[in-house]
Structure formats: structure tokens, C-alpha cells
Image (tube, rainbow, N blue to C red; front, side, top):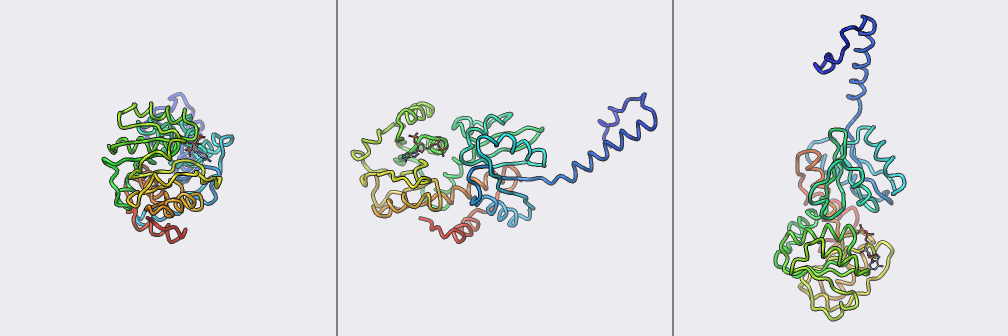
Length: 311
Ligand code: ATR
């Protein structure tokens, strides 16, 4: 029994009261021990998420038993679902669409990188509180460098979109010292806001969507819009790319198909965001378990599973 517990024992307790006290302590101890540590991804829709498979593969690789499941929750029921998860032993959670911004309200503190992009994809529970982080940006950079042989340093980059995903990516590219970071968004005010948040560095500029046909080609074009999820076409001009350009969609699966096909039709190299998904998951795994898994075999496994090809 811990010193702390015995300190709390009232010296005036009668013997039978004392017994009840220790029984309570022991029972709660047993209850605590019997709660397994759990991990999960929250989002909506979530049924087809690959995250449980990715974390299971990481765990198998490193001999760490992982209980990681997908929990369906939207903005209205996220708070209750997260509280229930914590009560049931939840130690870590990934957060995906549409909850990445809502998750901030549940954090006792937030990492610098997450507060800059105002987006959370990783929650970690300690001291009975949630601590928020964002591993999306580093996930993208690691995918570019490790799996796509593309170093964004000193490159001309275009980010399409200005929502949470675009913000994470824009800060990561800015940190990687790109030569130019152009941002274009359907609603220009959000692109202006993102450029301001980036510190209006001379290398950051906002392009009007209508001006894209008059722009010269980029080394990297990233689709961070949600257009692919509603099968909407971005209707992009071909002058944005050459055959040297890497075109990258943050989505994977059917949502990335149109953009990847557009890139191929214009002779550019293209990748979906499956590598980023695996890399951000590895970064979360490192935070929770203290070990970084090998991502290359897990990415290959996920590509085989989904039939998706790398660039
Ligand atoms: P996320 O957190 O995934 O980035 P979000 O914050 O809702 O989601 O942002 C969605 C992004 O996709 C926005 O940049 C949005 O543009 P608006 O700011 O104009 O809404 C963009 N988007 C969604 N559908 C689009 C479409 N059909 N064409 C162009 N951009 C689109």
C-alpha cells in the first residue's frame, strides 16, 4: 500500500472502518490494474480508416501489444465519446475529419506546432488530462523526404486550400525553408489569414484562384482542399506543372483519384497522401510508446491493401 494512502487514513478510524477503507483502496487498485490502456482514432466517417491497421502493424513490428480502435464521433457527440474513452483507459487518440479543430477545446495544453496550425491530430493522456499535438506537418515532410525523394528546401511550392490540413502543411513547408510558398484558396480571405499567420515572410504569397492560369509552374503542388471528398473538380490549369513537378494530394483512396489523374494527364509525378498517413501515425506512436516504428514496410503493406501506388 502506498505511503500516500496510509497517510490519508484517519487515525481515529475504528478497526472495522479501517478494514472497509483498505478494501476500498484494494478494490480500486484492482479496478485500475484491470483497465487496459487503449488508443483510438475519432472522426466521422471513420469506418474505413486505415489507422487501426497501421498501429497494429507498428505494434507487431516492435512487440508492443496495441489496443487501437476506430470510434465514430461527430462534432455533437465528440466530447461525450472522448470522456467515455478516457474513463475506459484511453491513453492516446488520433483525431481526424471533422474534429481537428474541435479537439483543441479538450486539451489542458497544446504543443507549439499544433497551436500554430490550430489543428490537433494527436491527444495524449497524462495527469488525467489531454495534451494536444499535431504530427501532420512532420508526417508530410517525412513522406516527401523518405518515400518520394523530394526535399522541399529551396523549392517553389503551391498549397491549394487554407483549412486545417493546409495550415499544418504550410507551416511544415515554411519550416523546411522552401524558396516560395504560394497559397491559393477558393475563399481568398482564408488564404490571406494563413499567410498572415505564417508571418507574411517575403517568400509567402497568396494567389487568387482566377490568376492560376497566368502563373508559372511549381516544383511541388499540394492539394489540401476537401474537394476530392465530394468528388468536386478543382478545374486547375495545366501551366501549374511540368514533368519535373511533384503533385501531392493529402487525401488517399478515391478522394485523391481526380487530382492524381489530373497530374498524370499533364505529365507530372503524383502521389496520394497514404505515406503521410503512415508517417503521422508513426510520429503519434513514438509519442505514446517511446519507440519509432519502421514505416517503409508498413507503407508497402497499406499500398498492397488499398491498391494505391506511390509516385
Ligand atoms: P480541413 O481541416 O480538412 O482542411 P476545412 O478546414 O473544412 O477542412 O477546409 C477545407 C478546404 O477545402 C478549404 O480550403 C475549402 O475552401 P474554402 O475555404 O473556400 O471553403 C476547400 N474546398 C472544399 N471544397 C472545395 C471545392 N469544391 N473547390 C475548392 N476548394 C474546396
